[in-house]
Each structure stands twice: as C-alpha cells, then as structure tokens.
Length: 189
Length: 187
Picture (cartoon, one colour):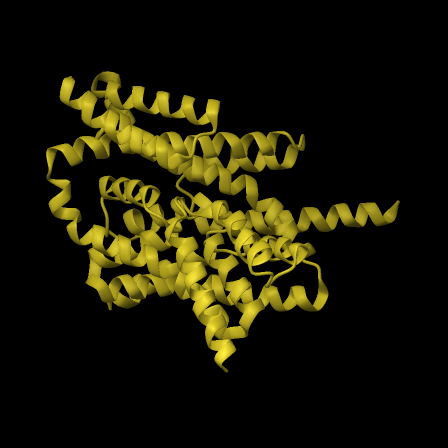
C-alpha cells in the first residue's frame, strides 16, 4: 500500500509538472511524456507508448489529456487515470481562472490593449502556419479525395454557414467508406 | 440552467474536436459566439491569445475562461468537466479495444477522412481572426480603408519567422506583444 501511495504521488506530480510547462497544448507534450515515463521511470515500453499516442490522437479532445489518461490507466488503473487527468487539467484551470478574474480590469489598460492587438496578429500567424503545414501534408499525399474534401468543407463552413458538427460527421463517414472501398478492391485483386 | 447549457456546449466541443491542437478552435467559436451569446468576437480573439500564451490545451483553457465569464468558478469547473468527459469515455473504450484486438482500422479510416475537413475548419476560423486583427470590428465588406497596417506587418513578420526558422509559437507571441506596444505607441 505504501508503494502504491508513492506511485500515485509520482504520477500526479509528473503530469502536473508536464502540463504546467507545455505551452499551446497538443503534440509538444507527447515527447516530454515519453522521456518521463519511458526513459526515466521505465513504467511503459517504447512501442506501447507509440500505440498509446496513436489512440490519444485518434480520439476526440485534447491530446495532452487523452495521453495522460492512457498513461495513468496503464500504470495504475482507473484511479491512476483519474490522478493523471487531474494533474494535467489543474494547472491550466488555475492559471486561466486567475487571468480571467483580472481580465476585465486588464482589458481597459491602454498598454495591455496594444499588446493584445499585437498578439492577436501573432496568434493569427501561428494558426496560419499550422494551416499551411497541414495543407502541405494533405497535398503531398497526391490523392484527389482529400483535396476535394478540404476545398468543399472550407466553402461549406466559410461561405454557406453549414454546421461544423455536420461537416465532421459526413467527412468521418466518407473516410470510413473510402477505406472499406479500397480494402475491397485490394482483396479482389 | 446556465450550468446545463455550459456543460452541454462544452460536451459537444469535447466530443467533436478530433485531430488535436487547434481542431477545437472552430467548434469553440461556433458554440460561444454563434450558438450562444457568451463572448463577442473580440473576446473570443482575446481568449485564443490567452490560451496560446498559457500552458494547457486550448479546449481546457477555453472551457475555464468561458465558464468563469458566464457563471463564475462553478461555471468554469462544470464547463471543463463537460469538455473532458466525452474524450475520457472514448479514450477508455478505444484503449479496451486496443488491448483486446490490437488494431484500430475503422478509426484510422475515419481519421483520414476527417483530416482535410479539420484543416478546412481551422482555416475558416483563422480567416475570422485575421479579419478581426486587420480590420478591427469592421468586416471585409467595409473595404480596405480601415486596414490596420501595424497588425498586417506583425502578422507577416510572425508568419515569416515561423515558416523560416520553425520558432516555438510562444516566442513569436511574446515578440508580437512587445512589437504591438512599441509600434502602436510610436505611430
């Protein structure tokens, strides 16, 4: 029991620390987690960590939360998952709470206003960079369907105001159907 | 009642934001500025800026921020739980399938279909942010007269630095903030 206690504390503190230092969320946390749990603590095998990453990416929601849940579950069951998820969520929850309590007073300040205007242009650049990188990787597949889906869903969302959830559902089904079709064709030959 | 609405909105955001990273952004915009009058577009842009400058996933940051603005600390907790719940349930299910069958072929198919759509939706949200940054409250239709040249130059410089040197976003954001203070003071 004493050993378990120590393990839970280590799990909580590790995820807390990882989450508090990961800016922007997303993929950044995966290599950090790998270093901690695979190389440092030897709680998870290298290959299994890659599979867990794949699951975290294929599920909806934040990758950081999904990955820490899987690590916690793998190391210490449901209770472990609960611990790692709280460890991951707590830092942003506290930081954002503090910021948003001061947000209204902040926002009326002239200097803060100027900084926010500059940072808005910055965040637009960051997101455009992400879009360019992702579009490039889709174009490099050299398949027609993904490009068509990209253009059509952009037009649907941007110009025709189609509900986003509807677009996601349709494209998901399209992807599954496409995979089955190709598998059929592959087997037929 | 407001708690239930918050919970349901962020439950949907958590359930449909597939693809990680910025995939949640268009859904959040849709829920908190279009479906519900919780934030103005300017507040939403502030939220994205704050989320980028602080650690933690965008969806969690947004849930906390919107929850507090709309219904205080309890609202923040309820919205955050709502956004985490669907992914936790699905991840656990997938983990069980994985340990049993060691294969996720249908999931991979769905994912490959979704990827281009996710890019398109992020691009659409990016256009909204760009319009707000370049034209302020005006929309594109008000013409090029109200264009904010400082914002355009910061955007161009930021994008160039990101593409050329693969700099971490947080440095670009910090630089953009400092540049904003300097340039808007001078001009």
